[in-house]
Image 1 (cartoon, rainbow, N blue to C red):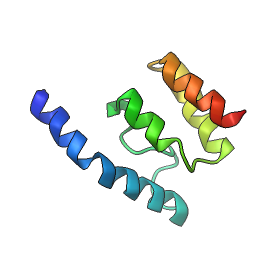
Image 2: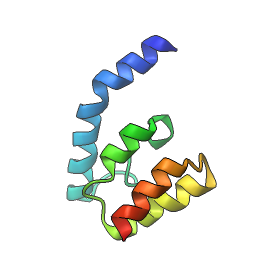
Image 3: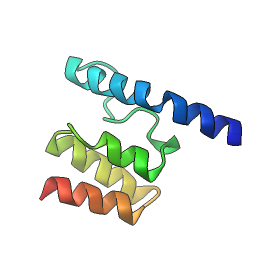
Length: 81
């Protein structure tokens, strides 16, 4: 498990950049953040920048239904305010 977390940590900046490029190009899955369920709170917070209000609402609704992490929900709420 630790090796997997380390690998994800090393790949995270590359995946975040690919996520942004995918959204700009309008390609890929409709959910705004790839691999969302595997991300830490800090990683999710880092990916919120650049999301449209509609994308932020989609992430917020998904987060509420699944992990319901208050820190993530607060960060999304601040972006939407």
